[in-house]
Every structure is written in C-alpha cells, then in structure tokens.
Length: 187
Image 1 (cartoon, rainbow, N blue to C red):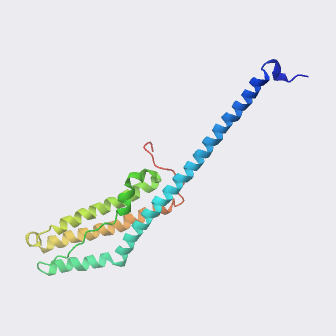
Image 2: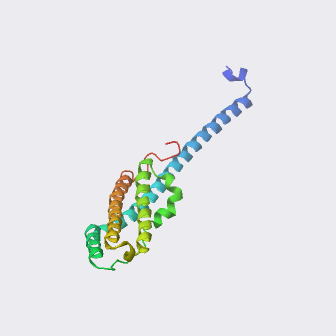
Image 3: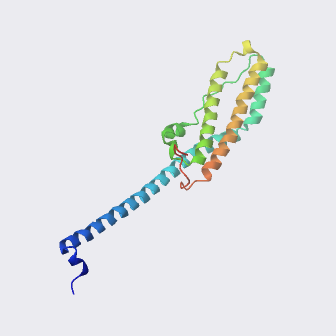
C-alpha cells in the first residue's frame, strides 16, 4: 500500500509542506512568547513608575501632615494680620522631581491612575506659582488683611494637595501590580 499523499504530492513536496507547517507554528509560538514577555516588561515598568510616584507623593504628604499645616497656616496668617510689616519667608518647593523625570512615560500608567496623579501634580504647580506671587507681594502696598488672605489661600492650596495626593495614592494602590488597563489615545 502506498502512502495516500504520494499520488498527489511527491515525497519531497510532502517534506516541504511539513517543514513549512512547523516553521509557521514556530512563528506563532515566538510571537506569543514575545507578546507575553513584552506584557511582563510593561507591567514591571508600570510598577516601577507607580512605586516611584507613590513614594514621592507620600513623602510630601507626610511632611505636610507632620507640620500640621492647617494649624501652622492659621497661626501665621493671624500673625501677618497682627504684626505690621510681617510676612514669612516662603521657601521654593520642588516636590515633583520624579514626576518631571517620567512625565514623558505617563502614558504607561493605567487610565484610572493618570487623572488623579496629574491633578495632584497640577496642584503642586499651582502652589509653586502662588509661592512666586507671595514672594513678590508688597505687604505695605496691599495691606496686612490682603496679605493674610493670600497666605490663607496658599495654605488652602496645600490642604487641597493633601486631598489630591491621597486620591492619587489610592489610585496607585488599586493597581500596584501593574496589570490594569493601560491608558491610550483611544481610551
């Protein structure tokens, strides 16, 4: 009995077909392995970025809570109103070094994490602008009451940063494994 395909294809053609099938199957396996590896690397990158942002946000929130910013701000604002010509020195803040370093990669974060993180860092930018305005403030020209009101606004912005920071930490915590839906232009 002759093999059934010998009547249709020569043995060499049969060998070539079998080799082609194995080659095609190999391409599929390699493609699948590559996608799996890429997904793992992306999840690792997401975890790394989220951990770094989490640490940066948590550090600033810890400082604000340690300093009891609401009570301190109220005390300083009262002092601005009471003491003629008094206005505190307000240091420049740079609490976004990690964010600035990875902002070009923000798209790797899950969609539900991007918004709270960006809102938090936008608040930090607004605080930085307020610091610039407060440093240029002429208390003799605007008066103590207006200067104290501006300082209270500054403290209010810091309290807002605490709320936004807690929201960002919660969003990051909800996907610390790095496997949630990744944001993209079509989402």
